Image (cartoon, rainbow, N blue to C red; front, side, top):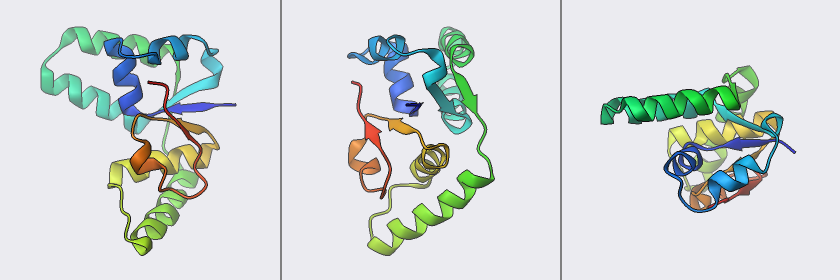
Length: 130
C-alpha cells in the first residue's frame, strides 16, 4: 500500500508531534510520497516564518520520500471531486480538493489530520497517524 502524506501530517512530523514521525519511519520510503502541492505549501509556510531551519528540515524530508508532480489524471480527478462536493453542498477548499484528487489519481491512502474534510470525498481512503 502506498500513502500520500498531507501537508498537515508532514508538518506534525517535522515538529515531532504525536506518533506521526514514528509511523512514517515504520514504513519503507517507497511506501510514502507527498504531492508537489504539499511541498509548495510547506515551502510557503517556511518562507512566511523566515526559517532557514524549517527549510532545511523540509529539504531533508523531500529527499527521503518521493515528491509526486500533479499530472493530467489528477487534474481529471480534481474536476470530478470538486463537482461532486459542490453538488452536495459540501465543499472542502480548493487546495484540499487538489490533494484529494492527487491521492485518488495515485490510488494512495491519504494520511491527514483533517479527516473531517477529506472523509467527504467519495471513495478516498484516509488515515490519521497523529
